[in-house]
Length: 118
Length: 106
Image (cartoon, rainbow over all chains, first blue to last red; front, side, top):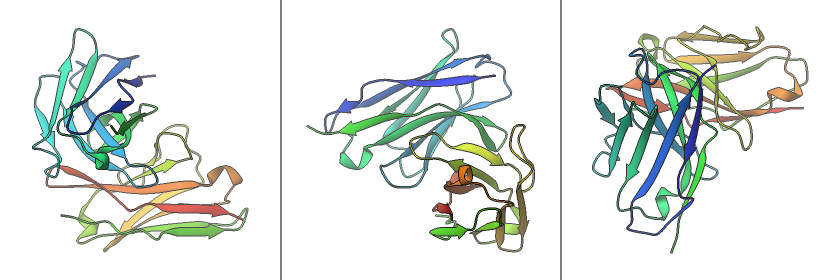
C-alpha cells in the first residue's frame, strides 16, 4: 500500500517561499503510471488543486497559481516537492500531496499545515 | 473558470439514505469523483469515474451522473459517515473540486 508524507516548515514569513516535500513509500515514484499532485485547503474552506508532475518532469499547474508555483521531482529519493513564492496570509492552508491515478486521487498524505505570518 | 455546485449541508436520519448532488455545466460528459473528509483528516476517495467504488469502501456508497448533476448516495447511513464530501472533475487539464457538503447523521 503506497503511503505519502508531507514535510517542511510549518511557519513561513510573508513574501518568502513556501517549500514542502512529499516522500512516497510502498511504491516507486518512477512507475510511469501515476502523476504526483499537490492540493491545499485553507482553514475551514474547500480543496484547491495546485498542480501535478510526472516522473519524467513534465508539470501542469493551476492557472491561478502558475506564476508562483514550481513542482519538482527527485526519483532517486522517491520524493517530489512544492515551492510557492511570494506567499501571503491567503496561502495559509493544509497542503496535501496525493497520487493521481489517471483522473482521480486515490492516495493522499496526511497533510501539512503551513501558516504564513510574520 | 469551471465551477461545481454542492449543497452546503445534508442531514440524514440514522439508517436512511443521503443524497449529495454536484452540479456543473455539461456534466454528463465528465467523469466525476467523490471524496470523503472527516475532521482533521485527509480526504479519502469513495467513488471514482461516476460509479466505481475503490476497494475497502462499503457498498452503501454509490454514485451516478446524468445531465448536469452527479449524485453521491449513502444508503443506510451510519454515524461514521458524518463528514464533508467533495466532488471533483477535470476542466482543461485542471482539477476542479466542488464546494463541499457537510453530511450530518441524526
